[in-house]
Amino acid sequence: AKQHFQSELTRNFGEELVAAMEGEEQFYTIENEAVSITLSSRGGKIYDVTLKDYFRYSDGEEAKEPIKMFDPATAKFDLGFYMRRGYSETKLNTENFYFTTSGVESFTDEDGQQSQRIALRLPMDEGAYLEFSYTLSPNDYMVDYDVRFVGMSEWMHNTTSFDITWNNTSYQNERGYKNENMYTSLYYRHPGETGIEDLGVSEGNKNKS
Image (cartoon, rainbow, N blue to C red; front, side, top):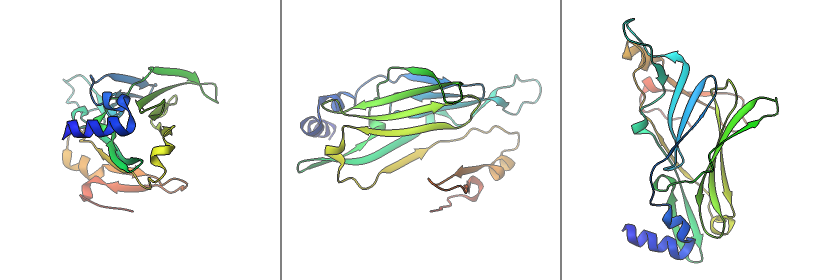
């Protein structure tokens, strides 16, 4: 099945994309005073997040450990979408490919402060590529995440939707896991809106649209 998929990609979308299915996982770090974020070349995803100024529960005898937001072994992020050339249509899942990068870039932002950015690219054919860009500003816990499809309009003009799969398993960082689960929540905001929604983990599988 894998060989058939590779031959389909080669015929319709180029050898560079097929070559990106094989590789060795590399890790890169962007950080500021508040947080350290490790990214993986496999899938171009965030692999690990450490909060520098917050620490896991300690009984006083153990050395304090900075909080890690989730277990890196469980880090999963996948962007799935269809590409079409001629009469051939193929679904691409980013988690199956190794991205390339020129490394972490430091630059001065509009406020004159030093920020960090890394662009992870999945090469396609004829100079086209998919890019995941992560930017971290000073003293900020939020990372800007941008997705760019460069030179890919020929293959994606019929694409109307994307599948996003994002899973992580959190560590226990507090003494009492029941209270930690009760007060743990996921917060998000829809584009163009000022209100913030929350999805409490303690409420189980809760869906909001």
